[in-house]
Length: 132
Image 1 (spheres, helix red, strand yellow):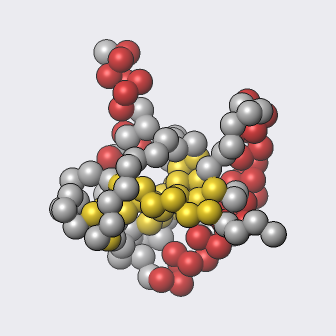
Image 2 (cartoon, rainbow, N blue to C red):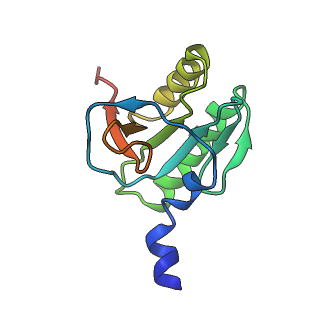
């Protein structure tokens, strides 16, 4: 039972939310997540594996606080944000959340579905902010 929980603990938070990710033709290998941010079709934002509900006005300060916690717990780790946005969310809301997340952390990944997977598995597209 414990092994099942350990193996599926990164996957379970997304499976419990009804999110329809957009489809892309490119496939990529799954990457380990550290801080999950999900926006569902009703623009509700969930933060972390416990799926705390946050609003757009406080998401930045909460992301910064969570990233600092990760850095404090794992000094050698390089935190990343994994962003899962329902494909039915309007582009303006997506872009606003994406912008906030990219300001908080240089490593940002988007979850998407490949056309071949037909909404059965998640792939992750890695995006990195350019360094100044």
